[in-house]
Amino acid sequence: MKKLLLSLINFYQIFLSFDRGVLKIFAPGGACRFEVSCSQYLKQVIVKEGVLMGLWLGFKRLMRCNPYV
Image (tube, rainbow, N blue to C red; front, side, top):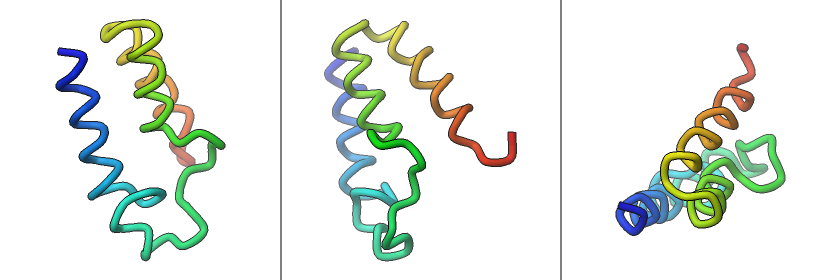
């Protein structure tokens, strides 16, 4: 399960991310307001804390990232 999630995050970072991926041409200055992007943070916390806690902490971080909240 952990390897699958990390693979999906890697796919997102390479192909879909506005900070690291192909779509960064649409946000040249970067789109993430955090120093370590949310996807990179999610990878780190899944490795360190495990899948369930990692998903919870990643979700909490994504909710803080939304500028409309």
